[in-house]
Image: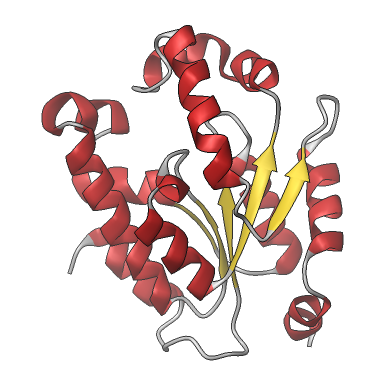
Length: 193
């Protein structure tokens, strides 16, 4: 069994029911999906998973190396396969990759499995957050191309169940508190019960 599938299977061994909930965080590179996701998972007392980290663990190489050695189509297939394995989670917070929610089959899967949350921020804020780390991100090396990619993805991101407009001066904890306020009340009652 693959490493990432073992991680997911061990977190929750039973199949999902109508009372279970997963929250999928969606947004462009630099939106804070991982940082906010960790805080949200801790706040809700559920496991946290980062799709990019799971792909890297499964492939035993960085995303940058996967793109260089195998190309983007291979990466997207692995990402899709690992995303599908989240169906076996009872509950959790899953940070998706920036492009995950731009494929129809992934959108349908996420919408059928849980709540999608778009962490929305202006491109200038995202660019500033990424800063010198742009070279580590295969799709963010060229600023003009990255800005065009951002523009092309927004229409998909806006299909999410919840949109949280990120404020430049907000801490991850403040974002999580606003997000928790937007979550269905039944979800919070189930988690605290």
